[in-house]
Length: 310
Ligand SMILES: [Zn+2]
Image 1 (cartoon, rainbow, N blue to C red):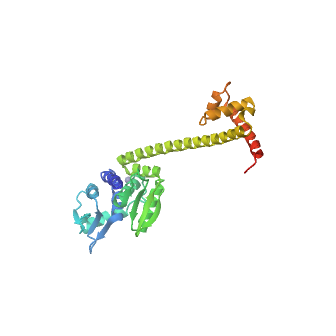
Image 2 (image 1 turned 45 degrees about the vertical axis):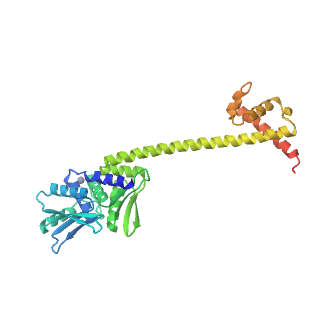
Image 3 (image 1 turned 90 degrees about the horizontal axis):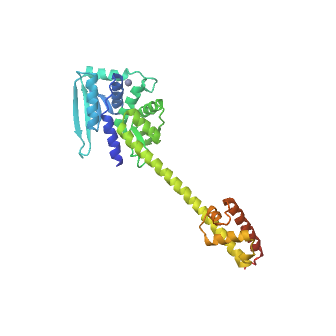
C-alpha cells in the first residue's frame, strides 16, 4: 500500500513536463546532480541514471525540447537478480555533453548552495530531486516524505531550496545516506502542490480530512466517557452516604427536603443531577440538587465519626 502511493506519486510527477526553458534546465540539473555523471576520457558522455522508465522518458523529452538535434542514447541494464534495472539516458559527444553540462552550471542561483533564483525553477528542481531519490508514505499510515542522497552538499541544497519555499525539513543519516525528510502533513501537502502532483495531493488531503474527523470524534467520545465516569463515581459516593445515614439513624430522621433527594437517588442511581431535579416536586435546579446532596454528605461525615470503627 505504502509503496503504491509513493509509486503513483512518482509516476504522476514523471508526466509533468515544465514548459519554461529555465524550469527544464533546473529539473534536468536535479536529475544530473542526484544520479548523473560526466564520463569518458574526454568527457564525451553525460549520463542520467534512473530505475524508472517513466523518468527516463521524461528526461529524454525535456532534453529533446531544449536541444532539438542532441545525439542521445538510452541504455537498459538489468541487475543480475533481474529484480531491478537501471535506465541510462546518455548524451553523446564532447560538444553536446559539454553544452548541457555548461547550461546546468550557468543557471541563475541565489547563494553558494546553488538554490535556483526563480521560484518556478525551485519547484522544478525539487520535483527532479524527488523523482530521483524521493519517497512518500501513504498518509493512512503516517505523514512522511523524504529525499535521500549520498552527498552532503546536495542534501544541504535540497534543504535550502525547501526552505526558500517556506517548507521545513530535517536531515538525518541512514545507512550511509543523508535523508532530507518532512513530517508535517500540511507542509507535505504544500510540497505536493508545488511539485504539481495534483492527484497525489487530492488523495493525501482526503485522508487528512478523514483522519482529522476521526480524531475529533474520538476526542468527543473520550470526553463523554470521562464525564460519565465522573457522574457514576459521584453517584456511588452519594449512595454510600445515604446508606450510612439510613443504617445509623434512618432516612426518616432527615429533613423532608433532604429525604426526598435521598429517596430519588436510591431509586435512580444513574440519573444526572439535572434529571433528579426534574423528578422533584416542585422541580429543582441542578445546583439546588447538588446543594442538598452536599448537606447529605455533611450529615454522613458527622455520623461516620460517631460510628465506632471495628
Ligand atoms: Zn523556471
